Amino acid sequence: MGYRYDHLHLRSRDAAAAARFYGEVLGARETGREGGERPTRVILDLGGMTMFIEQAPEGTGPAATPPNLGIEHIGLRVEDIEATVADLAGRGIPLVSGITDVRPGLRIAFFEGPDGVRIEILQRG
Image (cartoon, rainbow, N blue to C red):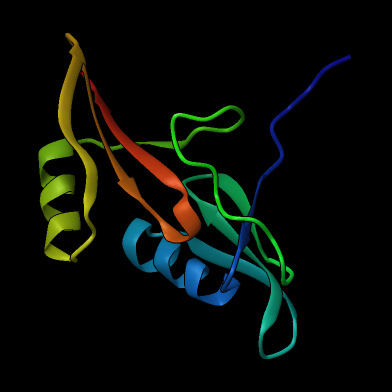
């Protein structure tokens, strides 16, 4: 048997607003939408990763608080982490953690996206 990545599926209290965030802040491109004026699902391409953002039904529980079991964060590679952090700060996106040099050739920082999704930006060199 062989397995291949297909998609990342997120639930959101406001799927359209979450999709706007990923588009405006991270450059995701909308490739599809299901439902009417208030979509039930928005489909994005984020750097080659397919994301389904589904409108969460009433009564859906809150996001997990890191550190947690299961999917902990989305990791996105950037060319210049300092410029990326400055860009995010300029847009009013608060960092969860500043730039950390994990080891030679790996620098990371975290910020929070919609619905408690933690997003890591990382620079490898």
